[in-house]
Length: 417
Image (cartoon, rainbow, N blue to C red):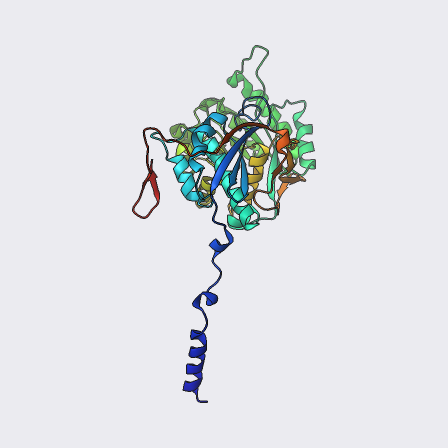
């Protein structure tokens, strides 16, 4: 057989093989054709959903489908879920970006920070559901792990000159990267004179440095209590103790004019953002203008995993680190998966490290670090018998004035309702 005959023979053999057999298996084939049928809302306690977690919310949502798949998220309040959850009934749960756009752009006004909290819980549940459907940890869908563990810092409230050094030393011994406190407390009359608090706060910072030693770090959170001049006075005194960062240094935390003045007058690292919502809510100017070194964005505050990844990418592009605020246990598990897939600078705040009894499997915190969990989804399991079921939503929402189909762009992308 000559060369020409050999080539013809190979071509005939290939033509007999189905083209589909030569193509790689489509990823979509692993995802079932399913629709959202029910969303259950749980409260771990008899108290308000915003209580006990500094407006982080311990409310839970469970998104279920017609084939038995489900995902869980944490955050929000019942009234906000009553408004939002019905939009997901009947939808394909795997269209995560599309559904986030619908939840975000479904009213005349853009969602405020509280509504974003509920959107974030639902978004987390959808990501959890999708990763479970593919039987992989969530971080695999977000780009895979970029690090072996997540460094954390232990967060205290107020500390004093008497206990700061020992508290810092104990935190270092437990394996944490840093210790954080938020200044001295108010007096017996409920008064905090920030001008007079500068000297005492500086003394506490000195003790923290002695406690963490040369290899540890410490953080001070001014909690938006100080005016610019008092902040500058305090920073001048504590700069010698080398803080990891100074958080929320100004009373008006969205005033970029004051942040520019502060940035021009100090080289101490600055952090802000725990009070913000989505990327347009104060985040962009602080990050893009280099006015902060660490962004305190968290979930579900920013609207969930979908926007968190974009905010983290924005931060990395501007050499700004990401340091999420502590949150409720299921949300902490979701934060860990997002951070494991981020390649920029990160550190995570831990405050309430004990896991409540309704969580039967959760995040893995050991030696002051968060470790990867290889269970599918966000890796969390709950005992519903230890939760209060407060609502079940199983009907699509009636949009009232905006009856009919929502508006879409010519290519099918969501536009407006």
